[in-house]
Length: 426
Image: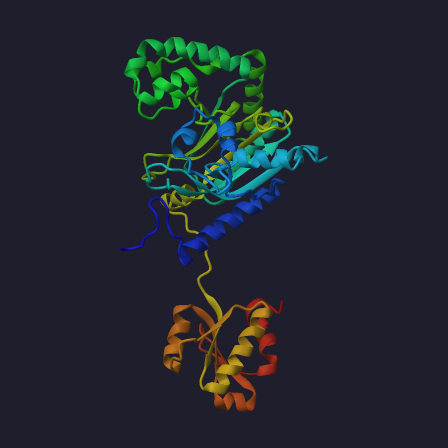
């Protein structure tokens, strides 16, 4: 039997991992600029967290979760999304009592969804997300959207489209729900099986169906914007005003509903319009979820957030031919010749490393020519040659691989010399 990675998962090999590291570090820096702090939650939760938080009528809960029983008979689920987990942590750890409000959090996390794997959509996916809990200010909605757009723009993406909508408050959604049921009921038998169920449980999600997107009834479906009460309408207008003040371009799409039950008021998606990116253009999505903390046992606390897939971000960078500046070189490589020089090389490698210098050596017992070839494959800046003669004189030959210049350096001065050559004597 040939053992491979499970379907819908992938290995991220060292060269590719450097790109991931660059992107993640860039994002972390942007989060710090926006005064967000990192949170890390367990990779699995009690199933009820997602059933109650995400919504038991959603595709995620009904079809896509990896759920299992532990030895105590408790139902646990691998995390399919981040908001419910972060909100659970917010409630459990009483972060609502923190004097600094709102609580602004970000995370990098692996998510697990049982769905058909395709390019940029895996069963184990990596996601960056943010959550702001404790404020119902429309300016926070605009800030969260601004953060997402800033991430993409700072990384070099230009072919972006921001789409926004308002899902309204409970009163507005109730009226819209009734209108949708009245509109789609005559066509119920023409809809896919999922939408027939959605029409009874959560009719707004019929608008998000990929199967029935071209059905004539979709084009004439009642718009949520026509059912917003005055409070919801004013809220949406303020969000748009703040986006205008930040010169963030957007389109309003009344059919943008998102696939999770907890959303209300602001909903948004960011899409790639890069040529050749693929049929699934969404890069990030999110919105406001006032009331979620109550469903998870906490006090009434407004919240808003988004999630973006790192895999899809990297795909977008590739589609726009954005080069990720990753380091693919080595500071020093020690070539040792003989048993005693090899022992001294082990000591020198340790000493250089604890002084912040990147260094490696041969562990294959290769001859000098092969060791130099290895150093060349690592794009090494300086090769340090230590043989019996050098060891006897307590010196080492330092060769600059860019210029070919070679000097003799006393072993006791090696660290100082290399710091001067590499990092300006830091």
